[in-house]
Structures are given as C-alpha cells and as structure tokens.
Length: 238
Image 1 (spheres, rainbow, N blue to C red):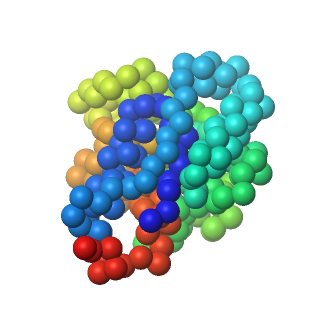
Image 2: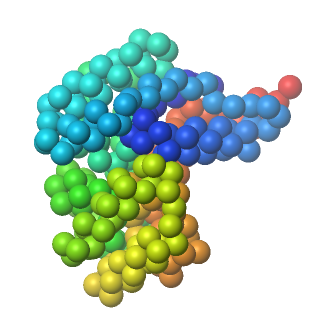
Image 3: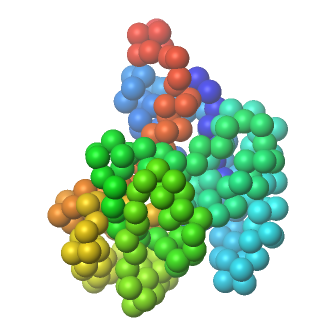
C-alpha cells in the first residue's frame, strides 16, 4: 500500500474528516484491521487565513510548497492539499515535488462528467467562488459554474469561517445554504459542488433536492484509489 501525504489544518475540522474517510474506506476495501499509511502536516489556519485576507498568495505558496516537500521527504507517495481554496497555489506546490499532487478540482470534474452534467452550482469561500482558479479548472472540462449572488457569497463565506471551521453547526445556517442551492438550481445548476472541505460537515445529500458533489469525499477516495492501485482484496488478506 502506498503512503498518502496530506497538507491539512485548513481547517483541522475537515482534516479530521479526510483522515476518517480515507481510513474507513481502506478498511472497507481490504477488511481486517487495515488502515492507510498516512503522513499529515497540519498548518496553523490562523496564519493561512490572515494571509488569505491580505492576498499574500506568494507567502502561502512557499508555506505549502515546503509542507509538500517535507511530506515527500518523509516517504509520502502522493500529496493532497486538504482544502479547495488553497488549490490556487497548486501549480507552485506541484512544481516543488516529484510525487503526484492529487488535485481536488480534477477529481471533482471527473465525478461531475460521470453524471453527465455540464452546469453546476459552486459553494465555497469567497476566494473559490470569485477567483478564476477553480472555475477555470472546471471550465477546461466543459463544466460551467454558477455561483451565488453577492449576498449569498458573503453568507457562505461567513458560515465557513465563523462557524464550520470552529466546529459550529447551526440549523439556521443549513437552511440558508439550502436556500442558496435552490436559487442556483433555478439558474440551471444540475448539481451542487461543495467546494469547501468543511461544507460536508453541515450539508448532506438528503438536505437538498439536487445531487451533491462532496469534494472532501471525492478527494479522499482518489487518495485511496492511488494508495491501493494494483492491489486487490484477495491479495491483502492473511
């Protein structure tokens, strides 16, 4: 089994979800007491969030590139950035290592196309919804993104940073997100991309009428696929 490397802590709430999802899936596929060989570098999100507000993307590129190198040097066979927003610096991180970087928008695009969809709603931080790095990545696959209006973007961003990243889950916020999803569907969105790794902590498939693309789970499953590549259930049993 290959070793997974995760740059986490952005926030640690979703990093814990990655760890749980990956290990549960490895156990489900292989049986017994199997779990994933896993290296995690967990960053201080206060520092990253401060740099995000200051638009210090070069500084964040250096921090994440160094984390990726440390994961690789420690034996990781692939690297994941455990956040959608910080994939803005994915090219710089990828250029810093020689092992594969599993890109969250890439695995999300594949899942959207597998459903035959070409227009989706996108929920995430302001950076993900408003800057081109994520929308353009999906557009390269022929997928159009519909994002909330200004008030909607402000509310989604607030829920993420003021609540979800702190482990706060309010029914009122879930209802607000449901209303935003309904509005995106009225504009032609065939499904909803939870383009923030904390959003699955408050929104599930039964919460809205349209299909959800949970980027955290999709990214985690891609890591499991990579780690178990070439291994079968039978070959791993004792």
